[in-house]
Every structure is written in structure tokens, then in C-alpha cells.
Image (tube, rainbow, N blue to C red; front, side, top):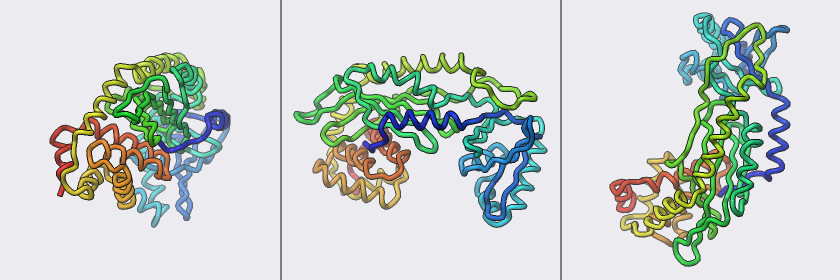
Length: 353
């Protein structure tokens, strides 16, 4: 499992960011796009105390394009070659959508998300304050990896007292992953986690994931476009209580034994074809680049188990080498998706030539 940052540093960073955030529900009539010749996209908002300019990051730009039905490739091309045309397009569609309103999430004077006015804010710091006490009470709780990326927060916790021995000396431990995105990149999720002591691999059973959409009631915009923190506090509390129950289910003995047994059964799937071709089949299915494909193959050789279990651990083991934390987590999820392969899908992998 890829290493993140110390829990204490995560909490400090969450508190730092919380002090710099501002969220607004803004009517389209109070939004103007101003892009520099260098391609820096700025969103000018007519706020109650005057107009203010916010530099948009790439995620917010992509969300803006989607909300206005501007094809993203066309958006990027205008941004690179004709910024005046880009502004003309954006501002024209904002005028056409004059009756619409949008949620703009900002931090330190930058626009980090451009979302629907129905987007329910589930902030990372509030989730952390609510869920950390629950995670700490898990039997033998160990925060194996926590991280805050540009798009998501991850809390990966192992319950050291809930274990299963697949074969003598190969011990699995139960765990849970809580993840959330404040900017619309993903849902609030609680996933069962299987941690392999032998190699520190983490497998996320995403097919048994419990998720909560960031969808809420329509928020109206008045003269004061800045959202106050107590606007949705009661709704957030209800969601966080549900997340607490989801954590207990994710690390339950029943869930853990079910997933562990699926992992054990992959030992009986022999790779009878060409292991290189087996990795290619997986690479095509999970859209791996050449470096990732080579990394998985290298781990498969190192595992010295030419069966489904060895391939599974090659995929999750490679996640520790991936530089980007979000992408590394995807490899842990790929392992979970492999557990859900049908017999036909496993045959395509195992018998590839």
C-alpha cells in the first residue's frame, strides 16, 4: 500500500485549508470569463461587495465546460490557440443560461470547483472530525495510510485484531477505506480493505463499496451569495452518522471472511498461458500504460506464484511504486475488481497466449 502522510499532518492541513475556503451560489448573470493570452482562465464574480477575480484550476475549467455543454477538447483547443474565442463561447452560454445558478468552491482566491447548485457540500474536515473517533475504536486500529490529494481525502485504516490466514504464514487483516471529494470528483465512499501483512499490499473491495452522492436540495441564491456553514449542518450530521454505520459493516467479520475466501479461491486459478499475455489482458481491461504494464509483470515474476492470487498481488503490490496517490489507490481497487471476475473473465486472463 502506498504510504501517505502522518495523520497529525493531515489534520493540520485540513484545518489550514478550512480557513481559506469560500463557497458561493452564483447566478449565471453574475459570472464572466476572462482568459489571459497565456491561457490562464479567470472567473470574475460580481459579489455583494464588488467584483472579484478567481483563477480557475484545470478541474474547475473542465467542470465549467461540462456545465455549459462545451466539448472539452474544443475548450482546450480554444484555451491554447484563441483565448478571446474561448471567453466569447463561455460568456455567450452564461447569458443563454441566465436563469441558472452554480456553486463555485474557492480556496485562497482560486476557483477549485464549478458545480451544480444542488451539490451537497461534505467537507473533509467535518468528515474527519466525525469519522476519526469511530476509526480509532476499531479493534487494534492502525492508520496504515492517509492522504489529502488535489481531488480527494483518503483514510485507510487496518483492524489488526481481525485476521485470516490464507495459507500458513500469509496473514490478511481487515480494514476500511474512507474517501471523499469536495470538488465533485467522487462520492463519499466507505470500502472494505484487505491488508496483506507479508508485503504490505492493500486491496480495496470496491464492489462492496457503500457510497453517498453529493446530491442535495436546490440551493437558491439571494443577495448574499456566500454560503454559511450552518446551511447544511443538520443534513451533514445525518450522512456522517450513516458513514459510521458503513464503517462497522465494512470491517465486520462477515464481510472480511467473504472477501478473504474469494482471495483464497484465486489460488486455484492457474496461469496456463503466457504470463506476459495475461498481464496484457489486464492492462487492456484497466487501461494501464506501458510502464504500469511492465511494473505489474515485474511484480508477478517476483511473486513466484503463477496463479490468480499471484496476479492479484502483483497488481496491488505495484501500487506502492506509483507516484500519484490517486492512481496508486486505483491499483488497489483493480485488485478488488479482479475478485469479482466471472469464470469466463478469469479464463481469458489465465489462458491468454
